[in-house]
Every structure is written in C-alpha cells, then in structure tokens.
Length: 426
Image 1: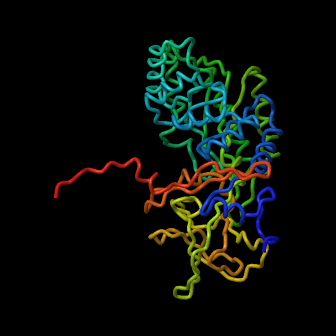
Image 2: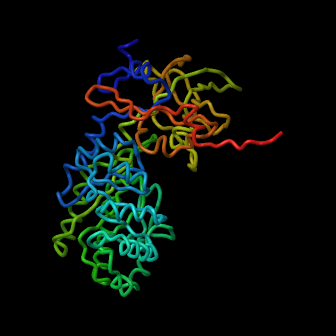
Image 3: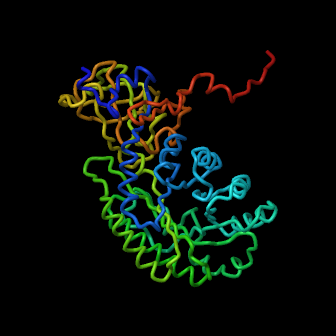
C-alpha cells in the first residue's frame, strides 16, 4: 500500500505516524514558503507582512516564517517570548489586544518592540506612566487601534465598525487631541485597524484597506499624528468548505498596492503592516488521526478515531452556526474511490465530537489513517485540550525532507504536574 500513501515532502504518512504516533498535526514548510512567497512577492516593499502568532504559535513554525522575512504580531506575553525566542528582532514585533495587563505592557517596554497597539485611552495613560518609571531611553512607540464607523464587507467574523471591545471609537479619538498631546513617554506613530477576518473575496480585502487608509488620513490630520505606520490588518481567508474558493493573492496584492500608492502621495515616508495568520499556515497543516472502530447505529455508519474536539475545535465546528466539513481524506489509501458515507467522530463523551458528518470516503477499517486538511491554523491552541484530561497532541514539522518533532504530546504527568493535592483527614 506504500504507493497509495499520502506523502509530506516525500515522506510517507505511515513512517511519520510510526515514529510520532497519533493523533498529531503535521506542518509542511514547503507549503508555508509558497503561501508566504506569493503574498510577499506581490506587495510593495513599504508593506511589511507580519505573522499573527495566534493562528499557530508553535515556536518552529514562527521561526520558519521569520527566516522568510515576516515580522510578528503577538497578543500575550507568552507569544511575545515565543517571537523573541524564534529569532524575531524586537523592532519587528507589535503587541495588540484589548486587555493587556501591566506585566505585559512592562514586557513590551523592556523588549523595546516596534510598537504597542493601544486599544483605549486608559491603556495609553497606563503605558505612559510605566514608560516613565522604566528608565529606558527614549519614548515607547505606539499605534492607536481605532474602531472606525465603517463596517467590513465580506467578513466571516466582523471585528470593527460596530460595538466591540477592540480599539477606540473614531469619534472618541477625534475628541482626544489634547490628551494625546499631553503624553510624555510614549510616541504615537500611527494608526491600526482590523475590520474582520476570513475574507474570501479579494475586492473585500482591498475595499477595507482603502477604508482604513482613508480613516487614518483623516485622523492623522485631525489629531496631529505623524503617520509613520498604518496597520490595516488583513484577515485574508482560506477556503475550507464546499463551494468556497481561496481569494486570488495577485488580486489582493495588486489592490493593496494601488491603495498604498494613492496614500503615499500625501504620506511618502509611511510604512504599512499587513497582518497574516490563517492564510500563511492553514494549508500547510494536516491533523492526522487513526480509526479505532467502525460501527453502525440506526442506519448511520460511524468511524471512531483517536482525535477530535479537544485538538481541533474549528474542524469539529464548535461555535459555528452551520456544521460543515473540513476537507478530509484517507491518508494510507490516498486516491482510492469514495464508496461509503461515514460520520467521523473523536473519542470524547459528547455528541458534539464529530470531525465530519456524512462524508464520502473509501471503505475504512480500524487502523486506517485519516487526515483533516487545511489544519495549520487555529488547531491545538484554539481547542479544549484538557477536556476529559486527554491533553494536547504531538506536532511535527516536515522541512527539507525530514520530520522534526516540534511539540511532544502531553503525558499524564504533564496534565497533573500543575495540580496540588490537599490532604484531607478521614
């Protein structure tokens, strides 16, 4: 059956699973390189591509993107440390998020990152005070995250243009010029806005970019902010479901370039940040599970596997209004004809633990390997890995024809090591 196996850079899936077990996530650097390269090559040099670690914060995945030239966008102290350990220079890191702690702000000040993206006027005042006490030379660079009145078009999840915990409403910001001018230890260098995510039409990405740049132009003039940087987010989507198509990267980059060229006529020294996460890593990842049992119940055929909700909540569809299947295939008989419809589940004690509902696959036997594709983003770290005390899976990065373990799977000792037992008297 070897000739029918799915391969990662020439490595048969059976060899990877024999070495590292199942369930596991496999990431392919060739795919990451290609997806990053298509985006980077098409953009103006003034547009920096920043990798959003929230999509996949694996240290080695982040480090590989750094070697390709990406910057890092982080949203927690652990992500900041990950970025620095992965080799990102502090001046290539920005930190955003609506609920930063004092400790996180202090870490940003100590690291001297490119910019802290401030999401409220109170946070701005807090950072100014922390910077004053830190004794570090020079002001701390800040981008103001604005929640503009304009709403995103084509977004799978709107994050601006309506009441949100993110950013500062544009109208409030316009009334804050005196407060901004009073800051002494931070330097406002530009504007950040992020309207939504999982855009599947290039024209929506471009339209939103133009809207954010227009808002930045108005705010810069009204507030007296020198626009050294504008971060217009990104949110470039990935097709997961039947009837969806990936957005055309050439149309996206051409449209962004035209918008940036227009903006640059009045702001020739401005640099731009495009945040990209899902579109850089999703296609590279496969969640590999093993069939444990095949059974029938009231006319429906089930495949019970060793992986599910606890590792890949996005594929299971938890939180989605409509249950749709991620692409799934039988990896050890790749290319075999689909003959039967199966509902593929995980091992958990919940009926919600369904990886695919009534999906057409080749005949499945216990021991077969199944792969949920496009799983390189929002996998283990966006999932309830501690549910039923199952723990997190292994993660493997395939690079230059070799498979590297980049996260070992949790053991029982790992799961219990942070707990403390109270001694009860009988």
